[in-house]
Image 1 (spheres, rainbow, N blue to C red):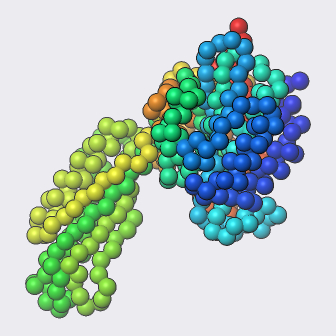
Image 2 (image 1 turned 90 degrees about the vertical axis):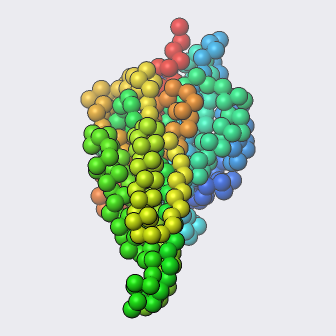
Length: 389
């Protein structure tokens, strides 16, 4: 029986798992119920299972044949701190917590693949099944690496997959090179001298300086860098003062930087530092600039992208695999795995994004119709990357 047909026979069961996970979302580092569900499912399949990796992470080890080759397949498990506004039966049972990014679907697709692989084992090597906690801004992949993931469960290559609203269901996007951006955070603190708002000449006004900074920081993107190298610098918070008639003595600006290479991150951080120092000096203020590195960019290796392209083509057809999709300036902590091993991260179409079906929307829901395709893709990728001689 064809892989897709075999997994389709389990579609009802997989849908039930996915909707159960959706109804019972758990935030980063709190995925106790989810990880236990995953672990018990793997154990019931006879898969060697390890709990508590990097906190609430679960790792399954599946071997076949005699090859020493090994690959890792990763799914994320955490939900978001969002109050769901859907009205279907599998609505979140926990107000303020929601699977608004489809990690419930990612977990289910990898469980579906694990079922098939455990029963058929048409590959030669080791598959490391990684069910990762805390992707949403908390760096769960880095925590798993710090907990000895590579040393305890070594793998040669890593693969990830994310559903993508706006990409037609039944399709994939696979491309070498940058696919997701870095995610860095910064804070600028301006220290001046407060005064009565009617006597501005007695002040050193941090609000005026901050307003100048909001504009001047954009020149780091538009005038200091190659315009063909994408990057984003966004000011997302500006805090100053408590009264309508008082010029405050300090102001704080906060924001994020996104880039598709570490070299670009370095350029932007240095450029921001120069601008902050210059604006502060011109206004007679003291400034503190704190730039914090978050997720690195996710960059697909050429050979691993080729393997993913072959696998996706085998399950969806070559015409259903996009090879020239543009990278997203959103970030993904699969990038920490990609820094350690050759890797590829692909998108699977989730269908239209209109009507509140975009990622991180309070009315988002994962498309259960793609569960079979996603699980089948994982199986075909294992067979492609670890072929039987």
